[in-house]
Length: 464
Ligand code: GDP
Ligand code: ZN
Image (cartoon, rainbow, N blue to C red):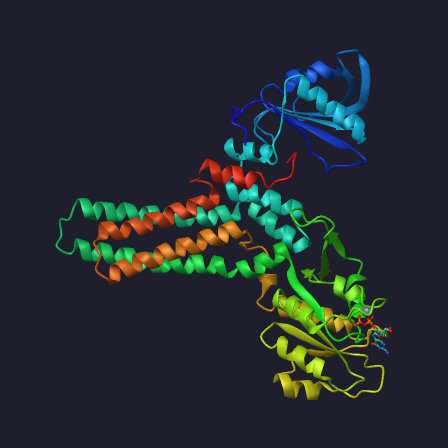
């Protein structure tokens, strides 16, 4: 990252790359008004009221030529995204004109913003904390309404305020310990202090664990539930997949960071984002004789949170079927007996005998669109049965960095308890408590280092 002073004036195109209805060039910093006034023809933007949108033209001062007809949003500090003066030029969205405007902005005093730098400023200027900044990024990448809600919730600062409460409680107990250490007037000061620390450590551990408990669902909401559809050739995998996809909610996302031309496919099943694993293998089977061999299935199964195992109900079980059942033994799965419109040779009972339970076995006819609703219901049920509906407005931890810090914070509390158990002196024990406080502070950014910031914000897209 550049080592420029943090508060120069920055600019970037804030809309996604490519042609669009409109494009926005955003400028933030002390010089924002200087820059725009040099290239804008229209009202004097320094004199218009803050938070207004103003019609005019961008001109190239070099030759006086008209570059684009624009609407310029004027937002004076501090009530802006970055807490600095912010100018947003809404232009017509052609790549050439937009780039030209950015070039002008850059040659008249702004510096090209780095990825995430606007949001980083919002953080450094104290408008939002670190977990809120991360929520901004999650929001951009949200794949369903529910994952968006989780991100919005975090952006509201709900996670932050929970963490701050935890930290405040730790501070209180540390202050208490401090007093007892400094004024050991009573013989039992050490005993009282130890008891206090130990009770608090136990209580905090429970609270942190509660947060961690939300992270499994949180992660899935964020990243999708890795799901594969496996089964012998011709049992109906593609047909079933199409039913899931044809709920017209199919989303295809180009995930940055994955190999180019590898698309990750998501399908939103009643609010559960399924991230489909290895659908290429399913789609190509019709023409090519390329079968999805057991090896390939094994790989798909290993990287899945959920497996949809498809069997042909109009045929007897084959060795390959049995092999697949065995492979999915320890995976969360739904067994689908497809082709129930034909004469049945395979029954739910027979499968139940093998897997020991029938709660995740369903029958479908992909061709008659029979049972596919039930399939969706079952997927949603498997995922939401822990009562996500009721916890929707509660805090959910979705971010890997937060999860890891919470684990470490919990470990620090375990060290407090271990220390007490093994008779360690209080002033040593309290250091672990203090470490817990620091770790929690890294979630909100109350304690942070520059490296962490650089790493975090560089994952943002440009212009955000
Ligand atoms: P895949 O190889 O497992 O992906 O299977 P496909 O979905 O490509 O289906 C193979 C063949 O079975 C196609 O001709 C489908 O039309 C047919 N098929 C799929 N589902 C059903 C079903 O429920 N009933 C009947 N009768 N045929 C089906
Ligand atoms: Zn097929």
